[in-house]
Length: 129
Image (tube, rainbow, N blue to C red; front, top):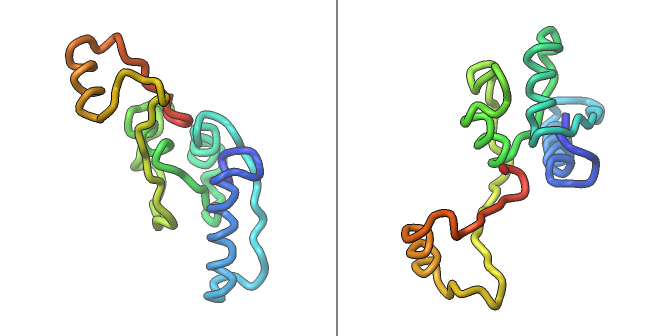
């Protein structure tokens, strides 16, 4: 299950898993990839834990943003212990970027500004805000 719409990183992760399972002969025919967007994985996670406990063969893809939200309790009443974690398929690198005309020219400049006035710096991330 890809906890997002088709075409993104979760979809790619599911398709990579599918290819790996086929190549290693763990499955004989391609598995079906279904899509359940919402909450950076929260909707899919809660559906698997609460609504589909009898579907032991369901695999759900997650990202670093999903795991961050889960660890912060943003997935509701379920936590990391409600599923079996199988494997890491890839790495999701993070970065810090600012506009070219930003007053911060280095990470040190940014951290200094944040220490001086935490409310003066706005930080956002695609999946974890």
